[in-house]
Amino acid sequence: MPLFAIKRLLSPTQTKEEGDAMVIRAFECSLAYDDFGWIRSYLQGETSISLCISQARSVDDIWDHARRAALPINEAEEAEEYLPQQFGVTPLEPVDGSALYVIDRQMPADVTPEEIDATALRAADCAPDFPGIGWVRSFWIEETKQSHCVYWATDPELLRAHAERSRMPCDAIRRVDELLPSQWGLPDFVARKAAPGAPA
Image 1: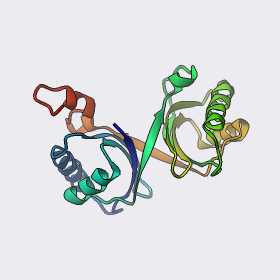
Image 2: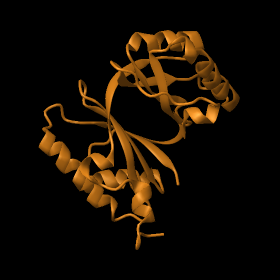
Image 3: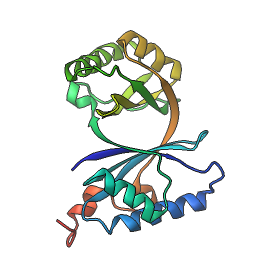
Image 4: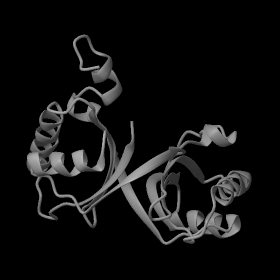
């Protein structure tokens, strides 16, 4: 089932209680769909920009769900997830003093899948030279040739230096907090689909 990267611009005055209510409302509305699940989100507190990762049958379901749940939605694009293990990289545990970041990378319009793989391998090969960073996962959007890469780092300037060494674009670096369904006592999508009586 397709994965989607959804950008939401939240109200900067939104309270924690309003945010909690929005999460519960979104979850309850998702139960109306046979195949819909929120996986995780990355929230940048300073700008209230949220990158939400969800699974759904179609982008139309993503927009319809946002309308039903009264959720802000600015963009929704089908995405593919890449993990370090796919490139022979062992994920590293965050070190003390590190924070989580999302790096936006705009690739050339004519970039090929082979060039994307080569870029990822260069990044992996260079990583040991930057002990203050760790690659967590990336989301590739084929339609716009853009990637959102999630890293932990002790200093965002290390991420810029790593991108330069790897010959990768580094258009924006945003410090984020990761939000998961379990933080609200909600089952993740995989567990919910596997539960007895769940829609097939």
